Length: 159
Image: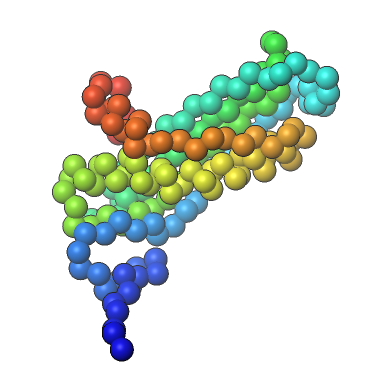
């Protein structure tokens, strides 16, 4: 019978010695939902216009531990009236070890936001529906394509 070494369960007690990328924790830093014209805007309005803004960033917390933030803003309008404004700061702690600085940056700008985004999407859908609106189902985002584009245009790439 073969013996296998586990790469860890996220508890930090990993036996792996090679390069690693591990999600340690997900947390919500801040969330705001406003519907300034409720309940009037809950009925009989035109198709809403949605403005979506998403930014991600990271900072080093300890030697191999990084905090990644995903900041999302959604503003729904019907004509000149705001239906709702949602602002969220979602975060995660990621352990990154054994990678070059360039690889670490790429992981923190692509795979880390990809890991956080589904949790943010679910929370946004829930908050919007609790505000009296149909759930807002945000589409998946290709963070790797955005990162590749930012690499081609470095002046627009935030840290």
